[in-house]
Amino acid sequence: MEHSFWHSKWHNNEIGFHEPTGNALLVKYSDVLLGPNGDEASQKRIFVPLCGKTRDIAWLLSKGCQVAGAELSEVAITQLFDDLDITPTVKSSSKGKVYSAPNLTIFVGDIFSLRRDDIGKVTGVYDRAALVALPDDLRRKYANHLVDITHNAPQLVITFDYDQSELPGPPFCVNDEMVADLYASNYSILQLERSNVEGGLKRKVKADSLVFKLSL
Image 1 (cartoon, rainbow, N blue to C red):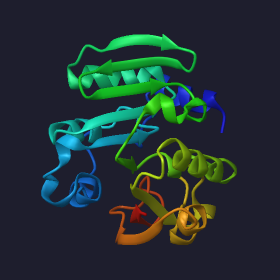
Image 2 (image 1 turned 30 degrees about the vertical axis):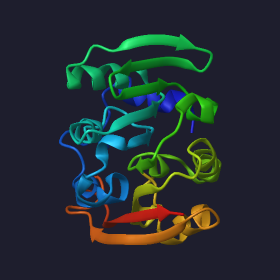
Image 3 (image 1 turned 120 degrees about the vertical axis):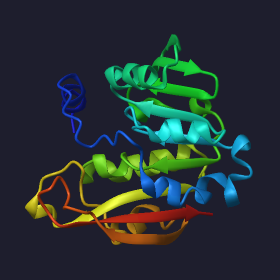
């Protein structure tokens, strides 16, 4: 999928995928990333790939986490910091711009250009919008790259399962078999939940939300 597709979505405010109040499944299964009862949240650094301006970042920060993110659209990131009411420090690097503030670092540009040394050590990955945003021909490349740059950090992954023939992505259908195919060689995979998407995906097609814990 071309970069221009996502730049156009953000510039035209076509962001139906954005959840203004954050994701209830993150809250429900936050122990995957934060530990039991969030007791060790202050020691956690969570990577959020293809983060957009998700309110989930605000929730993770409120729990005392450090957050690192990667996002193609600079429009999304300026809106993220505006929503957080934070003035970022902006620096340029060979990989693109980096927006930062206490406990928050966002890399602007192509996630495939990032390396381990760029993002540093992370204790977990929260993937709500990345895996499902990528078409099949990019999904394996992304999964392998994510494993590499995060040193196999545990993941909380949220996907959708629906009849792809009834609705073109994104978000794309990524069912349990697909998740296993992508990650079983690197993680133990536990499906935590399958639940109906109320009203259907994009109000057009019956779908389920799937939640996975990926651990070593």
